[in-house]
Image (cartoon, rainbow, N blue to C red; front, side, top):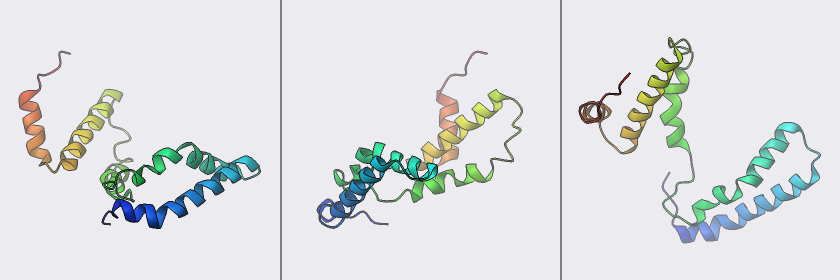
Length: 126
């Protein structure tokens, strides 16, 4: 999804977003909704500034599909990694996936990135 220019966001989307958050405030004041709905409304209310940040920076995309795709492999393999061995093995696996995700985020070859890290970063003393 291509990013909308900032002025188009202001014109086209801001009225709808402001209307939504006005409605959220009204609903939060009622406090009569179901627990799940109340938590969702409270989250929206508490995160309003962060959720509106895309109006201030035209570079921000209006979707989280990239993040969802990035974590899909981890989510799909979760059961396979449930018994990683020990807690420190799980932490090492998480660090490794973090390095690979960082490399991909910056459009680097993950294998080359890890090779460079291993060459440059000194080993930890056990």
